[in-house]
Image 1 (tube, rainbow, N blue to C red):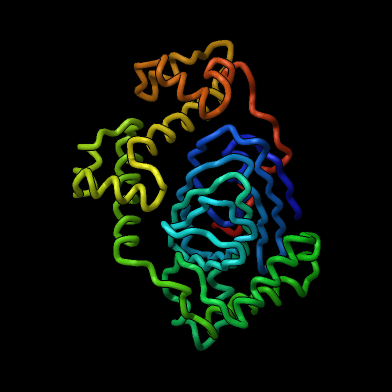
Image 2 (image 1 turned 180 degrees about the horizontal axis):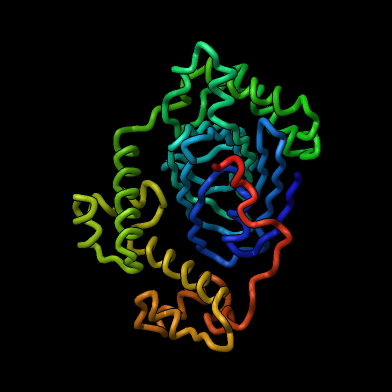
Length: 318
């Protein structure tokens, strides 16, 4: 099955990303839609996407898949896990890992999602070498270059993945990149790892408490850090301090609620109150700067309908 999608809204776009659970916090209106092409080759699921608007993202990899990612295009400011993205980098994300990033308009990524059980089957006697979390780019080498070429070729001609040999060949290629060359291009510093943990704890607190506008004292208590260290952690990961991040997150959530509200019976006030917003004028101004329209204008329109099936990757994601 080949799926192609153009989406102006985050939820439609993320439904086509193979094997990943992604939360995007949209930060601008952008100049065009996000685009995604996804193809199921049996052994490997290919996804090739480009950002049509800027966002910050938190991503979880399911426990039963591994993901290889090729950075096909990296505009200035693109970052994953606190590190600048460079065109041509190849990442491996192991089962159950997570990563965060700043994804500006123009970022283009090609993903190959493989079942963990298939990697173990190919690995045979070397399975233990797979069992390491990874959120950093793989070091350049002959095997990684083979992965890079395979993903670039498939991104240029997605239909080629339906050749029965492509999936098996790509599975062997990505497996060899782990078994033959398991060095990382650069280990994360302790501070970067600590920053990820602090930000992750902050996001977990917000999700569990359903607090859309957390205070600095609440975040510090939840993460057991000082205000200065908390600010440093968010800047390390998202390039913005926590207050600004959660303002953007609130606006992104508001947009999603307005797009799915009934324009007849619903109101901007109802949505705002449900998210804990009381200063409507100030938030409406920020909303207009972010999305180039007022909340009332968003409520009056429906998101463009997509022909893409929802959750098209559920077979691989489990």
